[in-house]
Image 1: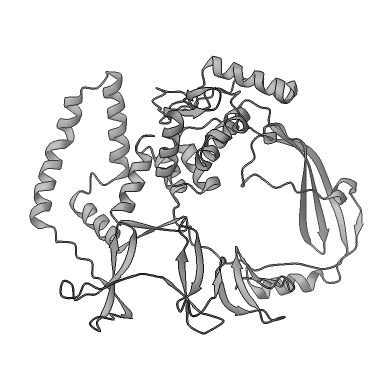
Image 2: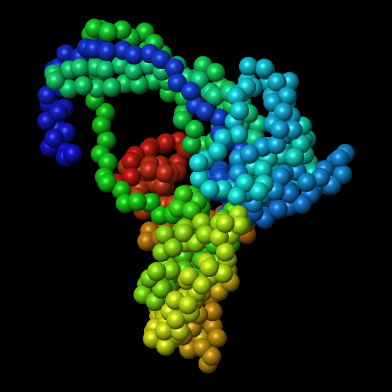
Length: 468
C-alpha cells in the first residue's frame, strides 16, 4: 500500500529460496454472446465502431428499410431494430445452425437452446436484431453498402452467427510460488478450441495468455530468482459515462425503452446539459443547474424509482391489468401543482459567458465562448455593435516544440482529432497523438501519449516510458 512497504517486501525476498508449492490445471469455457437487442447493439457499436447511439440507429434503420443488393434487388437486411428481446424465430435459428454446419464444421454448432430469458420484464414484441438472410454474408453485400452500413451489418451478422456456436475452450494452468513467507500466483491460459471466436471476437475479449513454461511446471520445483518487476498504481476516480455506458445503465435501472435510448442521449447533448469529448460525456454548468432546479421543484418525479415504477404501471396498462385513468389520476394533480409553483418561484437560469484571452480584432474586447449548432465558437461580447466571430480551438497546455506557441486541438473534415500549432500555417507542427510536453531523454524527440505510455515519435529511437 506504500513505497516503504514495497521496499520491505523486496528486501525480504532478495535472498529468499523460491519453490512451487501447488500446480493446478483445468479447462474453462467462454460462452458465445447473445444476439443483439437495441441496447447491446448501441453499446457494441459505440465500443467497436465508435458510432454514437444516434448514428447506430440511423444506419440500422437504413439496413432495416432496405438496400439495393446486387443480384437480389432491394432487401431489408436486418430485422426490426427497436427490441429488448433476444428471442429468435425457429426458421432463423435453423438457418443459422445449417450455415455454421456447412461453412465451418458440425462441432461448431451449439445444439442447446440459446433463446434464454433475462428474468426481467421485457416487451418481447419483436425478435432480436439479426440478419434476415444468413446466407447474405458481409462479403456478398459489401459492394452494395456504404462503409458505415457494411461495418454495422457485419457486426450484426457476426454476432448472430456466433450466438448459435459452441463456447470457446481454454486450457488453464495456475501455480503458487512460496518464498520467505510470501506467496505469488502465476496463471496462464491457452485457447484449445475457438468456437464462436472463429466468427466474433471483440476488442475486450481476453487475450490469449500463453506461457509454454507453465505446461512443464510441477510441485516442489525449486526456482531461480532473476528480477522483480513492480509498478505503482493510484486509486482512480470513477470513469465518466460514455454513450455505451449510459445506455447500459439506463437499461439496468429500467429507465426508458429501446426506442428512447438514442433520443434521450441526443437531447441532453443538443440542449448542452452534457458535452461529448472523445467518447466521454461531461456535465456542463447548464446541466448541473437544470438538475439542481428540477430536483428542487420536482423531488418525487426526478427520481429513478418513480420512473421505474411508472414504466411498470404502463406495462400493466398495456397488459390490460391496470386502468390508464387510475395511473394518470395518481400523479397528474401533484405534477400540475408542482409545475405551477415552479413557474412562480424558481429562479431564471443564467450561465455566464466564459471570457477568453483572445482579443477581438475589430473592437479590442476579450472574446467569449458561445455555443452554436456545431459546437463552441468565439464571439465578441459587444454584439450587436460588433459581430466579429472566430473558430474556437481548445489549448492543451503544451508549448509547440518548433516555435513555442500553444498547441491546440483541431479536427479534419471527417471529424478526426489531431494536434497542431496555433500559429499554423506559419508553423507546420502537427501530431495525431497528444504531445506530452516532455522530450525524449535519449534523442530529445517529442514524446506523445499512447494510452498509459509516453512514446518517442522518432522511429529510430523507440523510447517508451510510463505516464507519471
